[in-house]
Each structure stands twice: as C-alpha cells, then as structure tokens.
Image (cartoon, rainbow, N blue to C red; front, side):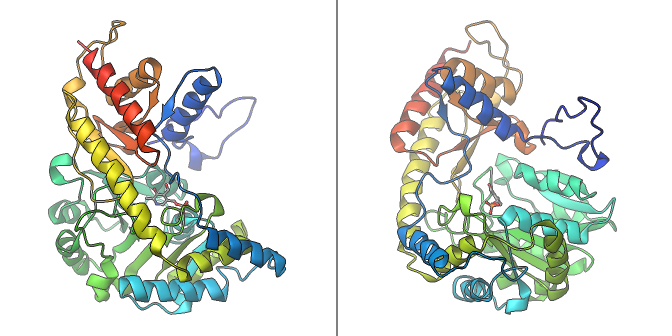
Length: 410
Ligand SMILES: Cc1ncc(COP(=O)(O)O)c(C=O)c1O
C-alpha cells in the first residue's frame, strides 16, 4: 500500500477519504532514482510500468489525420461510436465475447475505468476482495471510494494465484467485488482456464458478488500459455462482470490515456455519470488513435511479445543464479516478482542489516545504482519487482550489479 503522504502542512485539511492513501511507493522510488541520476549517479531504473517501445506508426498517423479532420472537440461522453464499435469487435474477435455498444465504455486509461466503476458502485464499508500481491492502485482507489480492500495473500508457492477455498472464505455479506488481474502486475502470473474455473464456480453461488477483471496485459503472454477472459468461460457471470482492458501496454500507448471495458448496461450507465463530472469524455485524438490500434495491423503485438519473452528468460535465469533469490517463471506481463527471503538477516558492507525487502531494494539503489520496487509496495513480502521493459543491454548490466551487490552481503 502507498505510504501516507505528508499532507498536513500549512493549515491544509485533507479530506478523510485520502487519509490512508498517498503517493505510491513506486513513484517515490522513481523520483529518488531520477534525482540520483541528475546528480550524476549511473542509475538503472527497472521500475517503470510501461513498454520501452514506441507507439506504432499507423497509430500516430491516425491521430494526426484526426487532428487534420478537426476532431479536436468534446466527444460523446463515454466514447466515440467508432471506438466503441472497435472495442465491441475486439471483444468478439479476440475473446469470443459479445458485448453491444451500450455495454462498452471508454475512459482516460484503465485506471479511470477502475475509478469510475468503484465510484459508481461502492458504498462506505463495502468490501472488495483483492488477491495479493496486487497493483497498488487497486486498494488505493477502493479506499478513496470509501470501500474496504480485503487483501488475500497468494505467495509464490501458490503461483501468486487466488484459490477457490480462499475466495469462498473471504466472501461476506458486505463483499461487492472480487478483482482479478491476469497476467498480473506485479507478479506476471496469469490465470489459465483451469485456474479460473473453480473461482467462477464459487462466484456462481454468491449472486451478490460482482467480478472485475483487469486484462490489461492480455497480449503479453509467453510460451504455450493461452489467455482467456472469465466471461468467455462462464457466460452466466456476464451480467455481473466488468471486463477491463486498454491500449496502454499492448500498443505502447501509456501517454495516450485510453482504457475501455465491457459490462452490464446499468453499471456502464452509472460509470458514465461519474465520468461526466470528472472529465466529460476521453481525449478525442487519443480515441481516434485507439480505433486504429484495435482495427489496424496487429503484427506488432507478436514481435514485441517475442522480444519481451527473451528479456524475461534473461532476467529469470540471472536472478535464479543468485544465492538467496528465487524467481518463479511468469506467464505474462513484463515483470518478475522474485523472493529475497534468503537475503534477509545478511549484513551490507557498510554494516546495515537487511531486515525487509525494502531494506534490500534501498541497498540496491544506494549501493548498486539499480532501482527496483519492494514487494511491500504490492502488499506481499519479502519479494521485489523488476520491470524488464527496458533494453537487454541495460538489463544485463543491472543484473550483474544486483548479483555483485548480493555477493557482497555477509
Ligand atoms: C494491471 C494494470 N491495470 C491497469 C493499469 C492502468 O493502465 P492505464 O494506462 O490504461 O491507466 C496498469 C498500469 O500500470 C496496470 O499495471
């Protein structure tokens, strides 16, 4: 969870809804690493949650053409008809799921989709079940909306996946949502059909519980893993599932800020009410670009997937060669979430004892000039996340530094 921000300065009284929420630990580490870089330290940052590739050319051209056509005004509230249609087609073509245009919503990033959905559905005290480790924004958004995140630890031995018995036990009359993310940020773990089935079975028995699935990393999966989204497996849950996705990671479009979702009409309508008072609509130019991303040639996805796979293999084998670190092979996304239990209790050359994963990642940053994020930022310790969305050359250098830093521990 985020560290509490220092927001009580100069007589400012912050709203109670942000009392337990602050600037995310990931951003804090990034800021520290960048400050060190500016001071001349050769820091390698393996913390970024975005592809290092560029947005494909056809997508950029579509944006330029939209500007030239004068598509620079407010659009329909929750998405242009063109983009909604492209999303409907995408769900049908790639996921085998039929949504109509009024079951689809577009927002300023998948993050705003999550925000709209929770704002539109959560009352104070409502519970949201979140398997842990989780993307930090999940619990913070739930808390901002007055909900209670119910965090269920799912460690490396469990493949970082929630089990049906854990889900069953966590459900209470106050449970509103279960939030599943596959492939996962930060663990890279993904739910295949066999992993999903028992969970969906549990949900069928609890009709008051809705399912939110975050498929953001759908297109970054490896080896013979077959991506599947829950509604395709269990259509009976379609009327209480929100299927979230976006163009940020698949098409290297993080800065364009477009996310989308398919879900039941009453929820989609309620989300539009929130959006109408927040942003009025997503960016017109970015929506035109996203139509091209979804409808245009898709070859780029396979090419980039292959390059991410090579980097994953490099990182996993280098980490597993280090005494004290163990790394599960992730099925997708561009993160490894390695365990550092074996390093806890060791001493740094300067005489500091490594007591937590945060101590370890601080040591890596200060002494090895490598910025990675501790598991505690994602709710599960002792682990650390590496984002391998960076060049192989930089990755190799960073891994050598991590290996030497670990060897120097006593
Ligand atoms: C799992 C997951 N979901 C959603 C998002 C948000 O993506 P967007 O850029 O569309 O807001 C991220 C971004 O890091 C993510 O890791």
